[in-house]
Length: 298
Image (spheres, rainbow, N blue to C red):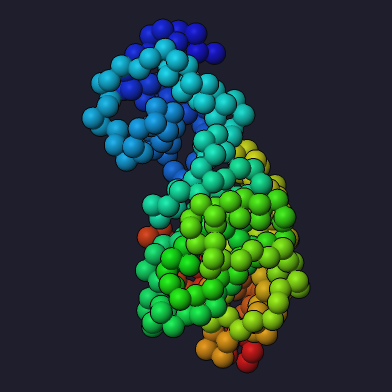
């Protein structure tokens, strides 16, 4: 596929131009850490060459060794031919400046809830130091549980997932974070196997993709575990259970922060009597909502 590329491409600039052209020609889908061909090519190239991931320009005209070029072109071929997301090719994903180990046992970290945690959920959480117990449901890689532990320094965080395979990845990330004394993982179907606790904060990025959207997912997303994406006919199967069962595990002034992706209309249709606060991030307006225990019990 890349015979001439093995000899003609000599600098990082050459490799970047070639990669972007190939990505555009192949009409790849992005959304697993980058949203365009240039950023993804830069990430894969800098990762391959063990260079700082935020520093491309000074190296653009540097020449690469044949073995370095070969490694990069092999990654490109897998990305294009097999449509494997970049994070699965490198075994890592970055969220809010933090590195997380990932593989196909978990969806790739990208939740915009991470942006809210970076600011300790202000102003909805008045004093981050007063948060004592946090629950991260559908934790996957454990990324949100780890970011929550960083955001709320006095909190004990429980990270829950139905998949034992996902929790193996989460445990690895928790250990790497150095926060393993404050984060405990639990294999549970939502609250079913979870010890009783009154959480001041529950965060959840559940499976919410509706069945029609699941049928039309780009090939890149089909490498992720279906169980972590599929939310039933209207995407609300898990959300219905969550909203019904959550109050029994919430402190009197507890709040639930829930991500629903592009399912705003399906959420409104399913819960017409709820009036959540919609939390905005840099790129989202109606994908994350906040509900109090009082709202869920009324």
